[in-house]
Image (cartoon, rainbow, N blue to C red; front, side, top):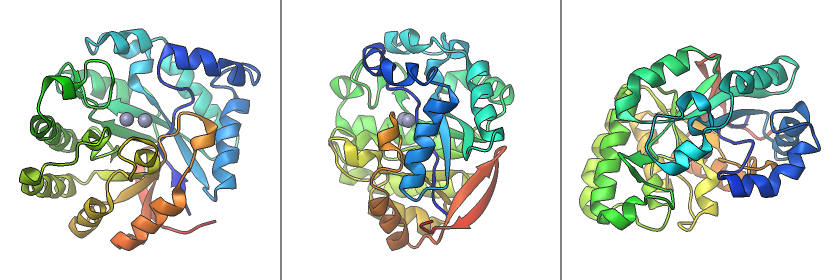
Length: 286
Ligand SMILES: [Zn+2]
Ligand SMILES: [Zn+2]
């Protein structure tokens, strides 16, 4: 089977949501069975049997004070309990939808993260390093790239990724080579450091995602790139498949490229989750 374990029911940012709102409002809202059904329909049309909705934790009031970024604070408008209940209702009503979340790695919020994850019925939890302290890795606000040289951004990012893996909080590390998003590839001097982080991820037991989202970004390639995916495979790191869609149209987008990369790296299975328990299933088009 194929899955898509990374997507959002709404775009990021109030302006983009306002532009798109007419679409979900005619279905009864962004958490309605009708709107979620559009994501399921697109997945099925692309040969994908199961999806996980993994809204950003920064969308929820529960996490409003976790980060100083104005963007974060402006985004924290939603009710996480109601959100999870709507997804669980869709799942328990027979839609192939899992209750997920894209959880930021914020090292000074570990206790809050653990408590929030324990309080809700998640099937799968993504861990994402979007922030280096106050600086954003992939955000146009407070960009790390304006404040630091590329080698420093990558070096700090890899330290946080390793810490996130070792925290035991997450099931899957999302977009593991995210700092390349705007075109800054890993500096050659840091290649040995990346190897060490891959080994640390393998020891931690956490999965990484193979995400087609990078194909839609300035860098124009999968997260992780095919070489890095091969290194994860050699190290024995399990994988999930992901699109990071922020609209139904992007669910399972570019999966022929992602699935071919998995196979070329030697992966024969992907990881399926339910109630944060995992199993391996063959990589196979429906
Ligand atoms: Zn992300
Ligand atoms: Zn995402």
